[in-house]
Each structure stands twice: as C-alpha cells, then as structure tokens.
Length: 131
Image 1 (cartoon, rainbow, N blue to C red):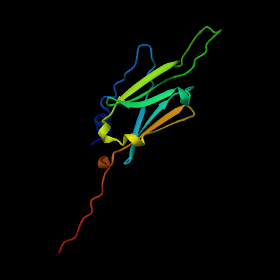
Image 2 (image 1 turned 90 degrees about the vertical axis):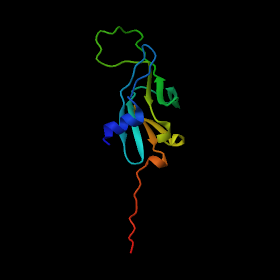
Image 3 (image 1 turned 180 degrees about the vertical axis):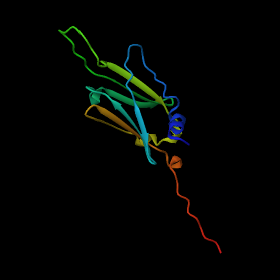
Image 4 (image 1 turned 90 degrees about the horizontal axis):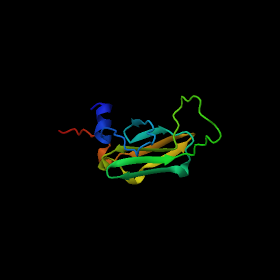
C-alpha cells in the first residue's frame, strides 16, 4: 500500500473542521514503523494556549495567540496572521495507542506523535525448518 493510501486510510480525507474566521494551519504527516508524526508551524503560540484532544474519531488541535496591532494600520501584509486556529484530522482510533500520544512545542513547531497500536505494527515472521 502506498504511503498516500495508508495516510488516507488512517486519517480519512484530512478534512478540516474550523469555526468561521478561524485560521487552519497546514500540516505535515510522516510515519515510520512505530508511529505517525504530525507537524504544524504555529509561530507565536504558547503551550498554555494549545488544546489537543481526540474526540469522535478526530485528532483536534486548536488554540490561540495574542496578536497586537494596536496603534498600527496595516499597509501591506504577505503573512498569514491569525489569533485563533483549529484543525481536525480524522483518525481510526483503534489504529493508535491513544494513551501514549505525545505533543511537543519547540520554536513555533508543534509535533504530535501518535504511536501505532501493537496489532498495527509490522511483525517479522520466523521461518521454521522442518525435517
């Protein structure tokens, strides 16, 4: 199975769920034989302003950051500016060890690691010699 098909199987169509006027950050999904890693660029977001949860078959990542433009009028902007964001990724909960999900925020990069459930990890099958 190709990596793209495997990601689609585990995460659905990567559909976004967000309230109106909310920013939807991009996401990078990687995998190895032990886990999936989801990365998001969240500049200016603090740990205490993040909320990450699994609910109703989705990994939901949301939060806010304080944006202060007080006293300034925007003349030109080529950056994505946001104060609140929310991203929901559909997952098959049975494919992951939900108790071991780990999230880390470092230098504006959020990494969420979803360990595969033991029954979903590849297994080496020993070949026995008979006779």
